Amino acid sequence: MKRSHFIFAIMLAGSFLLPGLKADKNLTPEKLGWKLGVQCWTFKEYTFAEALQKIKQLGLKYVEMYPGQKIGGGYEGTTNFTADATARAAMKKLLKKNGLTLVNYGVVHGKDNKEWKQIFDFAKDMGIQTLTAEPTPKQLDYVDKLCNEYKINIAIHNHPKPSFYWSPDTVLKYIKGHSSRIGACADVGHWVRSGLDPVECLKKLKGHILAIHFKDLNEKSRQAHDVPWGTGISDVPGMLQVLKDEGYKGMFSIEYEYHWTTSMPELEESIKNFRKIVSGLQ
Image (tube, rainbow, N blue to C red; front, side, top):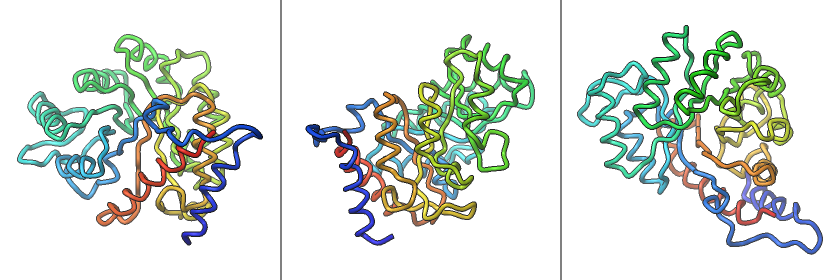
C-alpha cells in the first residue's frame, strides 16, 4: 500500500477525538497494559531458539509459543505439550537467555479430558497465563474446571469461515454460563478473511477478550495476506481505539503469516506504526 494511505490511517486515528479532546502523545502500549509480543508461528520456518533471537532483535519481551516447533539451539525435542522435563528445561533456559517472558501458548486442541489435563500441566510448569485454544462445546465444562483449578485462562481462537468458531457470535454463545477464565482469542485477520468487520467483532466481544492475534491484511478475502500494521484495510486505528475504550489488558501477539523467511523489516515497520497509532488514540 502507498505511503499516502498510511498517512491517512494516522489521520484517521486522530479523527476519533471529540471536540475539545486531544490525543495523549505520550500514550504507549505499556501505559495501557498492552504486552506486545510475537506468536512463534510467525517464525515457523525456524527453530524455537532462532525465533526467540528474532523476537529479541525486534526489541520485544513477550512470547506466545505454538505446539510442535523444533527447540533447536543444541537441544532435542519440540515445543509440544507432550515435551518431557528435559525439553521443558531447555525451553525455559532459552527464554531466560534471551530475556523473554512466555505469556501464551496455542493454538491447542485436546482430544479428550486426559489430553486437556496434560496441556494444563504443561502450561503450569511453563508459567503460561493463557492457552489459545479451540475446545469443542462438549469439552468446555471440563476445561472450565481446569481453568479454575490451575488458574490458567482459555482464550477461544477463531480460524476463518467455515471453522466452528469463525464468528464471535458462536464464541459468545458457548462461553455463556462459564467462568471469566474462558473468553476469546481475537484473531482479527481471520475475521477479515471471513468477511467480517474486525472493529465490530471486537465490540461484540467486549469484556471477554483474553488474547489477541493481531494482523493487518491487504484485502478482504479468504486469500488475503499480512501487510505491515497500519498499511492495510483492517482499520488498525479503529481496532486499537475500541480495545483502549474497552479497557483491554493483555498480550498482542504478532502473527505474521507472509514472507516467512524475510518478514523482519515488515515486523519492524508494524511495531513502529503500532506505537505511532497508539500515541494518537483518544
